[in-house]
Length: 503
Image (cartoon, rainbow, N blue to C red; front, side, top):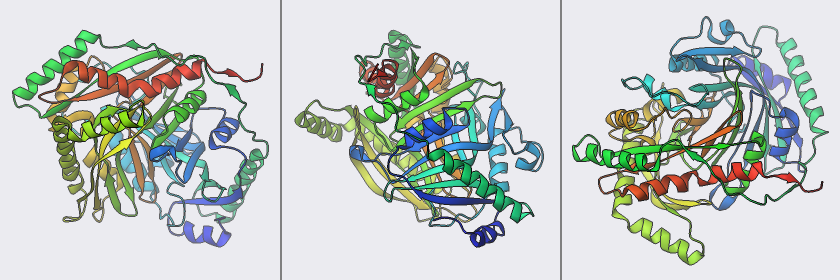
């Protein structure tokens, strides 16, 4: 897959961004080890992986080594952080104030054809859009106080990237070149960058062995008192009885101390709860505050691949059983639960309606319905909804049509969002937003930011919610939030307790 000069010249004539790739054989070091070795966890870097059901790792892992810049925000206005690409060149002028307008402008300026034989991510934007992005999509009253300490969005314009192909043991070393008239200089500069990155691979070693932690029992502080959460569920019942909504999702935040590095938290989460969307983002806000987002989300908001749009609603849950027999009983109970089935059906209908806004009429269909999918601590009911992306639509149009996920808001969405603002004591921050990538070639893959920890200084925060319907039992909904938060909280506790295997 190594890019030839002729291929580079042809691609430069077709779009403003060209990814130059050099493929090497690597089978002795993991993506996590390479990430740790090359980036040392510095801001502007990331690691994206994926595990299918049963903990089988998917074909590609992505290690982001550097970025041209970062689209973030401060005081609800867009900010461009220049890491080698000026604001003037990035946007053709000043960055638009509204965050989604800035995202539209950046995508429109740098959209470029992506060869189908390349991995799904080689150039584009990687990061997150937080929950409060919804305020650019819906007319909502003033937001609750944001206590997260991190910006409402942070999207890296990827420059240097490692793509692990676990099927072939090839490592694709990639650098994104911004096209100018001097193709000779650009080609030589790209080769020099690839030389430097490839040389750094030679000194990469497996991570040092660690002793299994003696204790992994988390002891978080709850942002919402137990009784107040139960009262919120009862107030949710009131809104449902009055006909405001059919369902509303109420969440709570768990705060805990973190002394481990973000990489070690990710390592523990990767071991404890392999999920379809695994991510480690090390970032920096406009004021220089460093923070990390570490997660293992089971749920996509939406995916665009080769002009096809995919949504996978998840609603309905049970804890995993201690034995295969107990596990099967929990699954049978989940499938037989009328309340869970009704909630799930509502969200499947919502996904169909959302996709219909950006897909070619008549192409939206439910391809899988109410399957039980199992994860380390929890099982869910999952369906799949698909459609063909309408001509002229972009991945950002798809995001606008589908965000926020009905599984994180409730339905109907506009009134549910107002009720969430009324019932929750603080802003959601990253929770309930999306994490993933928007490729300049037109593909995107955005996970819902759940089962996710936000690390700022020595504090880690995990948030989880429960879908409240007419017959919800308050204590059961509280217990559901605890189950959903268990994996990242256990990972943090385990990472804090890690010690070298050989002292």
